[in-house]
Amino acid sequence: MSRAKRQHYVPQFLLKNFAGENGKVEVFDKKTCSFRYQSTGEIAHESGFYLYTLDGNRVDGEEITKVVDNFGAVEFDKIVRAKTLGIPVLQSREDISMFIAFQALRVPSAVDRMRDTFEQIDALLDTIPDCDDKRKLQNEIRCVDSHQESLKFLFFECERLSAFLMDKLWALSETVESEDFWISDNPISFTRHDKSRAGAGFGTPFTEVALPVSPTLRLRLISRDFLYALTKDPVWCRAIGRGIPVPSPSYNVHHQRVVQLANASRFVYAKQFDRKLVVDLFNEYC
Image (tube, rainbow, N blue to C red):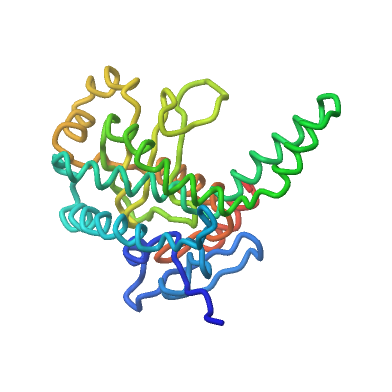
């Protein structure tokens, strides 16, 4: 019997942007509260991660993953080399949007969210009177493989969700001090900037979707609800209109680090950590 191969849920081309001169990234493990250095090939993967069953047939989604990652690698390499977003042509925006949507849905935390959804439905069914239909539905729900369902959602819904990203305001942030951005095993963040306690998603109002692309650069896709406010600021006008990075001061870098740390399923990656800072933030926010 052949062994399932390693399949990365955060692509190596992205992780390599955070590697040091020795080709390794520093890894913080939230479960053990420990640090280590590893190569990008040794992290952010699981054996057979993209294998699923469709209509009784075993399917390996890695070939689709390679196509999306190849397009993403080309576009993000341009951004990192130029240190500017520029004015991406339509095809570039489509490729980047697809990659970001794909990345958001293919991580272990997406599997966890799918599992939580089915558990919530099961719990809701427990509150209604017992009947044959209820028992049948609960038996079906309890037999669901959350990983399988998460992959099906990824491969069949990703393109639809990526369309929401195309319509956002695109900007790049760049660190202005010696502090670096971090990245995690759940690198796409969704942040609502209003007072609502509702969740944040691809198409929710007042929501920013962000991805750290290097230790100094972060791509931000911002809801058009902020168009009027942002375009009154010359710095943001240049960022949205010409792709010139918005300076990201220390407190913004701090926020980005906290988000990556809090959202990580287990692992956070950086070129090099201030280990005391990581542990302090972990104890405060996790």
